[in-house]
Amino acid sequence: KAKATHSGHHVYRNTDNRHGDARLRTLQELRLALTRDQLVLHYQPKICLKTGFVAGVEALVRWNHPERGLLFPDQFLTLVEEAGLMHALTQEVLRKALDQSVLWSAQGRTLTVAVNLSASSLIDSDLPERVGTMLSARGLPPTALMLEITEDFLMVDRDRARDILTRLRASGIKISVDDFGTGYSSLAYLRDLPIDELKLDQSFVFPMADDARAAALVASTIDLAHGLGLKMVAEGVENSVAYDELVRYGCDFAQGYFMSRPISAEALDEWLTARQS
Ligand code: C2E
Ligand code: CA
Ligand code: CA
Ligand code: CA
Image: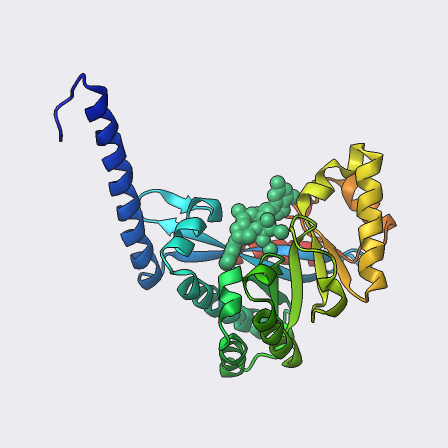
C-alpha cells in the first residue's frame, strides 16, 4: 500500500510492519484453527524389534491451513506456545487421538497411541484427572495412551512435574522421555523419576551406521535404559542397517521412515492391513 521509496528507512519499516501483520494474521488464524477443526493428526508406527509387530503409534500434529496447505509442527508450534494456546492444542490432540483409538478398538486393533506433551502442559496439575476423564468417557483402558515428555519439563517446576507424572503413572498411563540425550538436565533424574521408557533422539541414530563411536554410544545407552528397568525406543530409523544394528543391541522399539513416515489414519489403516497379510 505504501508507495515505493528509495529511503532505506522506509523500506525497513515497511518490511517490519509486514512481518508484524503476517504474525498477527497467523495468530488469529491459529485461534480459528482450533475452533474450526483444522488440526489433524498423523500417526507413525512404533515397531517392537523383538517380534516385528506394531506396538503402537505416535500422534504428530499438523495444521491443515485453508490457504497454505498442510503445515508441520516446526511451522507453528512456537507460535502456539507464544500465543498461550498450547493448553488448548494439547486438549485437542488428546481428544482426537483418543477418538481415533476408539475407532481402532472397534476394528479389533490394539494400538497404544503416544501423545507429545510440551513442558508447559506439565505444569497443569489437573492434567491427570482430565486425561482420566477423557479415557473413561470413551471406555478406553489407560494402556491405550502413552505420554511423551521432554527433559526440559524438569526445568520448569521439578516437584510439580514429578507429582503430575506420579499421578498419571499411578492411573496406568505409561510415560516416555522424548529426545533423550539432547537435554541439559543431568542423568540423576533417571534414578527417581516415574517413567517407563526412553526415546533416543534421532541425532544419535542417524550416524550409527557409519560411525563406530556413535554406534557404541547407542549400544551403551540401550544398556543404561535396561539397567534402570526402562524400555528403549530408537527414533529416526531410516534404513535396514540401522534397524538391524538396533536389533543386535537389544533395543526394544523403533520408529522411522524405514518402516513408515507419519501418515493419516486412513493411510495407516491400509499400511497395517498390508503388513498383516
Ligand atoms: P518428535 O516428538 O521428536 O517427533 C519426531 C519427529 O521426527 C517427527 O517430526 C517425525 O515426523 C520425524 N521423523 C520420524 N521418523 C523419522 C526418520 O526416520 N527420519 C527423519 N529425518 N525424521 C523422522 P514432526 O512430525 O515434524 O514433529 C516435530 C516435533 O514437533 C516433534 O518431535 C514434537 O516435538 C513436536 N510435536 C509434534 N506433534 C506435537 C503435539 O501434538 N504436541 C506437541 N506439544 N508437540 C508436538
Ligand atoms: Ca515424540
Ligand atoms: Ca523425539
Ligand atoms: Ca524432536
